[in-house]
Amino acid sequence: MTRLSATVLGALSAIALALLPGTPAVHAAELGKTIAEITERAKNEPPVRLAVTWRKNLRRTLAKAYKKKYGLTFKATRVRGLASRERILNEGIAGMVSYDLVNVSGELREQYIKAKIITAVPWAELFPDLNKSLIGPNNYFLAASFSKYGIVYNTNLVKGADIPKIWSDCLDPKWKGKVAVMTRPRAYTALWSAWGKEKSLKFHQALKANAPVWSGGNTATATQIAAGEQPLGCGLGHHAVVNAKRRDPTAPLAFAVPEMLPIQIGEGLSLMKGSKSPNAAVLLAGFLASKEGGSYFHLQGRSSPFVPGSVTDEMVKKRGATLAWGGWSWTGKREAEASRDIVQAWGFPKASRR
Image 1 (tube, rainbow, N blue to C red):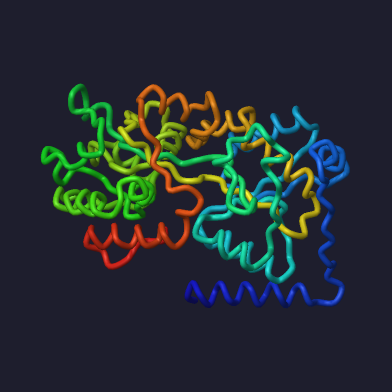
Image 2 (tube, rainbow, N blue to C red):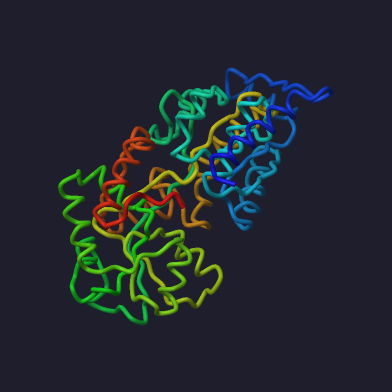
């Protein structure tokens, strides 16, 4: 079965189920107007159902912190890849609301808005202390975490003056045929938004000329570097190092923060229309994006640079790095076009959707 036919079949199945006799209709609870009203109403709602990318240790830690702050609980389902969010999109179109709060992939955010299955929330009014950069256009999304990308290296094989410090170090002939590079260029699409087309294409043509070792998943690539298969990888996520060290704390891995640190939204949360627990869900989202809640995302290597005192904030300050991020408007078509041009410069016909 093709990806398209599976998606269509899922949508039709969801619609058919929604139309079955006896299927309960969606009854949405009403969202309070003020934070005080939202907090009071949340006490009478069911546990928040959310679809996120959290691993078990982060899920348990956040559950404890959220309950301590509000006396509320949530039920988190771990989702990965576009297919899981496409399924939630199709179910929402069919009137089935399985989650209150969903981490929507950047490629699908416009589709969620156009389908009218998510609710805009006045985040800035309800949580005035939040950095405005965390709030998506028209209040549909709230960023709770960010992925950051740099240069990962094997500490047994790369030492002293050889430790990479800037992006151009990835082009050094001494690493020819030895640099691992992800075929999904999320690091480089973020850099594109800062560098522009001319500088980006020049870099990627030079990177190709350095005969990189093309690789797939972030964590799998970091594990290969730890095993000594390649001495370093350019454009890998910090979360890959965290994941690899979670499995093996002795892994000889380090993350070098380059002069410009590309970031991408890790958790772009949205309130589903028809939510049974909208007030509790909004409280949870606001908590996750706050300094208090956001302080825990380092457990997954995705703390926010826009949260003062976070691991990423301190990392950027220590290095004196500049952030590279195109903002909310960059996700979608513009990023897809940059991704296409990058992989074509590498010699591939089109971008991978892995």
